[in-house]
Length: 521
Image (cartoon, rainbow, N blue to C red; front, side, top):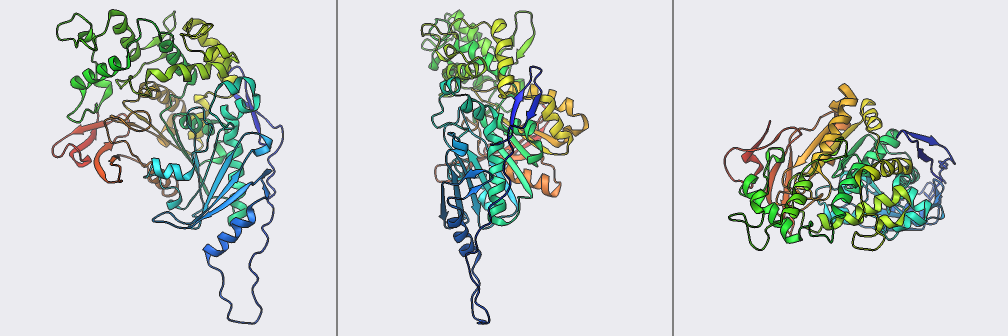
């Protein structure tokens, strides 16, 4: 069993050791026998040795967890040969883990975060396909990830299964990294010198959790597309979800049309809002009956108010700011307001153990239908902290003061989690870090949707700059976002500017990063 954590009511996590991860590593048996005195025996290659080690690992118990399968994949293209180690049902639970061990290992471990409510492993193959600029194996990094402790991604399971709730909330992260380090030590003969984490969306939540809960295990952490406060994010989701099925909720087409109108006011020729803070577009011209309002997608007064609430601040009844609202985005997309009920209800269910939060507002008995921010927020905030599913800005700041590095990023047109609120919380955290704030960077990706997609170039490489920062002391500055076609060809680039700078168009091809510079807004 891994070390388990519980969170006190004040948000600080107290580590209570229930049982220690067994770090004794079973010795790998010798595979090759060298002949004595023959003088003509060819020593095995790295590939031959690693292939044999891969087979030998199968069935072993390492770090207290049994390996259930191993598979050798030979080199292809720029991807080196590697051994995939699988641990199915770690500690007799539904926690599944993989570790990939490349032949070109360079004493680095890459820990990949999850997404949504997890339920499956984000494999190294899927990461290479979805994020081709990441290239963990090509950089000599062993790779590890898990399914977050469950196999179906259904938040209802967390209400009935305490182990799955605990694993998803936080515990699977510690178990995974400790198992991976034990496997690496067994396979290569030593633990990794450098350990990195990257994740976005729920993986971004994972990233901030490992910074606060296991800071000693990581040298560099990359956290994307999460707000650093799941309680207030849940309030924003539930506030919109409560309007589902009512005349106040715009249709998907109406939400998308509102975004297009904002782009006409604030976007460049490619439909990218370079500086979302400067976009103050008010959708009043879209109200039905207003001259020029589109007949098919105009907004009723109630719908107009809902749109304004989406891009505006969410306060308590006494005026306390909980959530600073969204930047303009396509809220009619698949990751827009239509997804809020599932996510908001799921996190409210984790916090309270009440399955009625999972019911959409149109269902009988739904707590979403009767959502009230003043009564819901204290209960849900305390519940998420108790479950270990939310953050401590002070603890993340302490990760920075220890000298460790943090890169945060967020799409500037994310319709699911707010980049604006992420920045607000990030600024609070860096203020707590004082001078150690120099160990953190924030990148607001212009025109990018939730993790990827959107009108702007959406592929990124934060791993390369993070390695340079950690291992060579070269702090990252302006980076580059890239748009790829289906064949992997580059079709556009745009500066990825460290906050608070933003891309400014100077002259030349609008699709080339060289035509822009990062400057103050």
